[in-house]
Length: 307
Image (cartoon, rainbow, N blue to C red):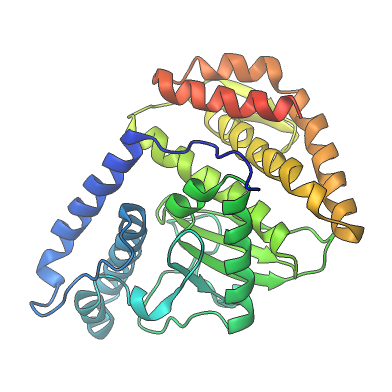
């Protein structure tokens, strides 16, 4: 039986996705060749929103470096060639890539490496696409379908590691809906990391959609970073980590062996860390001016605390 669904539907985000996509396409309209169409095979505003940001980023970089052929490619492929790259999953078509981490660019747009869809992009090998598809299905079965559908559109699988190794994952604000992460051979673990990063993407969109500006003047102690962080980063951690805790608690009974021990240890560690944030989280939430968003963040935090 599928687990209870957590509601990630938030009308301001859906409106934000449509409006932002429309604005990007309007900016890029002069570059789009008259014969170019934007396929709508996904049926998802979130899918279009994610791809529009890749096209915008790629076209801007090409224009700045005077790479005419690449710039023209984006004009001819306003969907970033998504139809040729997509993998079917339980939450809709996803784009699963496997770029070499050492080859990823770094620039002023991000403190971390990143990858932008472009003319040389190829889909990940079949084994990694299957891994991701199973991970999406696991997330959907455990109540996170809406989150993954709306905020984990492009996933870049980076370094293959062993269970128990430190797994790095991140997102960047310039490419919403895109996730970069290491991976092991366990889809259950990949699901956890997709949920974590999709949570960051969701919260970024929610803050943008509600025009919520969080002051950097107030800081709170983050047990994950072991330092005082601005409220923005603290609230992000107090949302993304609880989501992974809820997921882990739901999926744990169906695991065994090393995977069961790994996830049990993870959940126990997160319980201890999250418990130290209870009082500060209530204070940090007063900085969220949208009452619906504030209650969404509070409910996820409280559910995780109760595990």
